[in-house]
Image (cartoon, rainbow, N blue to C red; front, side, top):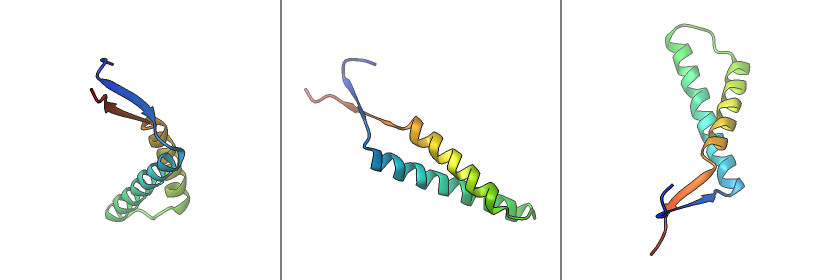
Length: 70
């Protein structure tokens, strides 16, 4: 990173919320795709997939990168 940026960790509450929202979006996307492909909707698949996706997204986006004020 250059000297013009600052890396801070996001608060845990914000990380959990963003992980939940991204996991929910993933599960809804899987449900819609299964519907249009005439597959049956598996709630367990959506819950597990959404949970794993949400955890990964909250881990990946745990840092907040901002420009330093000069």
